[in-house]
Image (cartoon, rainbow, N blue to C red; front, side, top):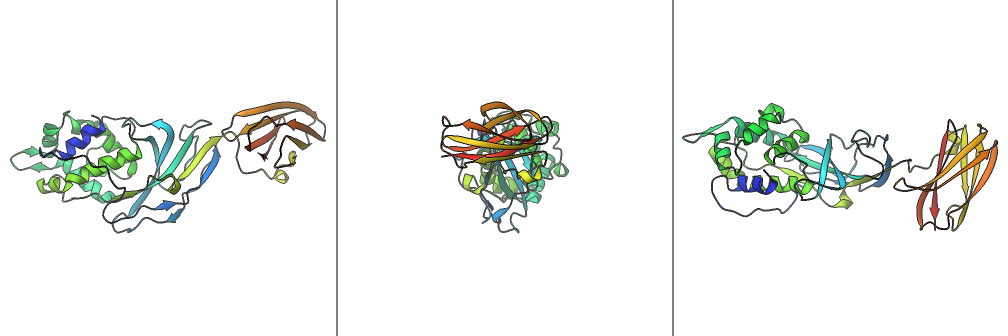
Length: 327
């Protein structure tokens, strides 16, 4: 069952025709929290710090719980409404390696605030309540659905009652079961919740939502209000060469126009490998040089486009990196 059918199912549950709405990113008079909007690089093994709000979501009485969506860029969700949500995080802290990402991937950390108690009540009612003379809410929903067996799908996904919904990941599982599985986008998540809220008041009157007439939530789709990361092979934080006594690297001039001089001090005599990476981790130049204690290597980088690069030198045991800027 796709997202469009899901929306039609909820909105027209009682055979009442209506339009599918997709407007707004907040309900219950709430305001989405805005993150600092950082743009940074991260290596696969980095553990990113918890997200920091520029302005917090409000009011907490309406949306008391805030968690985070991890959205992978350039990966269209199966709902075809945007990039796929690949994971969730309680505080916005994630590790690219733990997410199964690769060098070159880019992803966003997006806040999502909601009232989980409302969702638990609605889930409990849909799965377990009954309507006089019409039977169970599950049966009623299945009879109105384009594809029957929705509650069976929920049970198969591990959602049997309210105790199975404890965080936003469980909410996504719940929605994915109605959508027939597959990945969900942020816009798709919003669309489903908008569709549910459009008719939740009517559903509430049947007793199928335990009195919940609107699910309160808030999120923001603007990139400027999200934290964004690119996965690279090296850390963009310039390595302080004094931190690594085994291998030290200095570069001049920096910024440069055509050529740079790499000055190396090494405790390991032998061949050293020099690599220049762009910000996506692609190797744009590779050289080798025999280093005996202190030596330098001139690199002609005049053919590179203007921008930020990373010069890395490695020996058998150490690595040193410096950020360089092509004017």
